[in-house]
Image 1: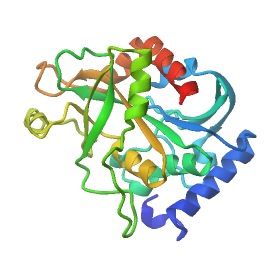
Image 2: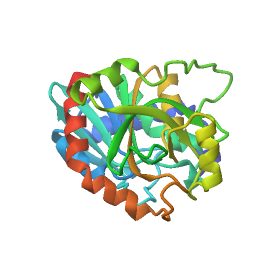
Image 3: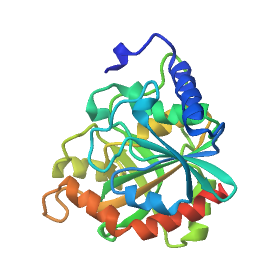
Image 4: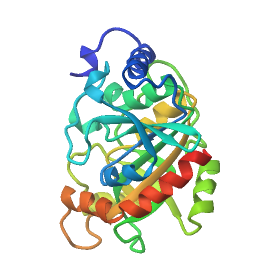
Length: 271
């Protein structure tokens, strides 16, 4: 299903319908914070807190079935201290061809469900050789190379402070040695060439992947506070001389599950 196949309702109307159905299926009327689990992050979800309910994304209007290994297509309602978190165990990627509205539908649904904050995670390639596989890096800014935007119509949204300095500082209170960088999104699904990684370095990027930036823009449009965390799963193309593969991404996530789960479990109740 592409964006052209969606009902003529606005993106916000579609999100409101999905949020209403989510409340019916989960029994949770309102959520406080949303968390999107990226490639390699799924094992960390177990540490977040008590699962109150779990539904399939395909039971909600506007969602598509997950098509990528490491993304289950499930949504959990989780108690984290005195907060109720809406945890997306996967996402729709732009390269799947469903259109940008589907890519950001989860974030918009979270906003419609009451979430004022979203934590966007991903597995990515790192350009800094100090970042060994399994290193978490806070996203301080991004460069969107998808040549598109989730914003529909003449709505001019300021992205100057898109990734919350407050939330990054909160993370460093928990892990003082957390580094931060600029995330660059390509369309995918192919990995970048060494020449493209050279371009990323030249324009100021430190992290490369195939997600996150479009969701972050949609979250800002919806008035949400955004925290982005990348898990470096491999050195970017051409740096190590080794070929890249998705299995490596998932394995790095498994190896780092305890650390990532502890970080998220400590951050979420304090947001």
